[in-house]
Length: 157
Image 1 (tube, one colour):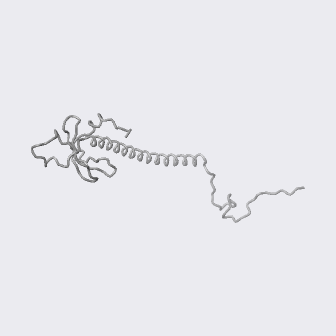
Image 2: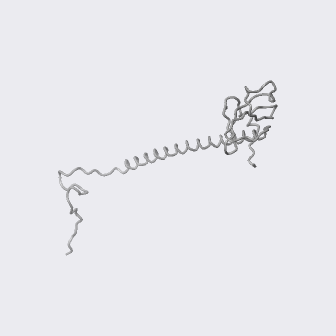
Image 3: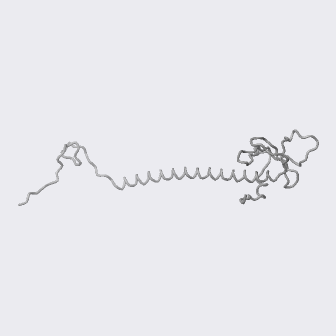
């Protein structure tokens, strides 16, 4: 006759995976559905937080792209303007409209002109940046949006 072997827990009672006595702590079975639901909820919450963060970063990047494209368009407009000097990086200049779609870049501020103005209207104060693009310093003085809509961005340059 073969000897029957039982797989009884042989270690200390306090480490037993099953209660050994009546006074042992209650061991409840794991509710797998509840565990799974909690894990799925936490997963969705984390994923949505990461997606929202990435969406905000993408919006910021797209805003920066838009600003660079606008700066390029404005810079192209300024380089096509009448400019009788070599501009210096970091210096401030003034953009004027001489006539319809003809522009002038000058070192003379609007309040410094005498009676002989060679422009129809003052548009904006600009500064040459180190990447050879121009920054509009007073965006409230003139709305470039309408002007830039009529000027397509030249990507072949």
